[in-house]
Length: 241
Image 1 (cartoon, one colour):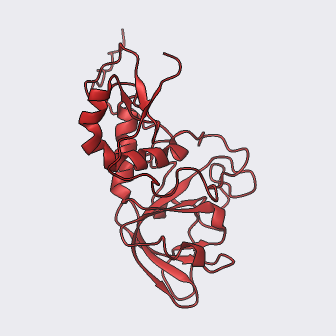
Image 2 (spheres, one colour; image 1 turned 45 degrees about the vertical axis):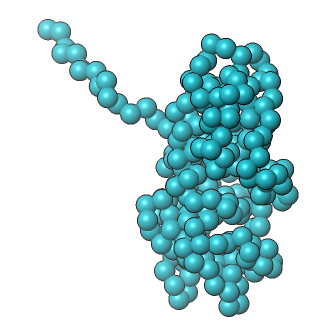
């Protein structure tokens, strides 16, 4: 007797890429983070992690008493304390930690504070980065980037069968002509620096850990544009076409 065939699920949602900021394994919410005392086969916190992960949260408020302390909201809306126990007690991050900005913490672990609910205790500057964009903007830009196949189609007319040039500011938006770039610029202007910055995440291999990742101290393009925000970037001829 033949076994009945399973009905194929045509509406199954494909898994998210590990480097997509929306991936809940690579970019977990607070309660999905390992404890600082937990030994895990996947999230082993050591000089050679078995996999990489990064916590992303929206800064709700900040205060400074003995050290910089933040109230942060994760992707599911849970609010937690983030306390800077770095050498300078968070002085280097104070001006960046504005309400609505996004904080990223590599290899974040749940810490139990003596007089506060569990949160994050930050000890390494190089594992922390603050972005001047909202968390939703970063998640939406990452989702759009992967849904469009890493962007190799014209942003204006969706052409793929013609030589494309890329935006020289973000290297993540593609155009078939100057006319398409000019027409898309009002919408792309805000997205451009976000697209540029999230490529630090999207171009990493998050699955296999050999050595820890660190955020660059003074990375190119991680600060505000030196050019006018209203200036239209040039386009560079895409390689490989």
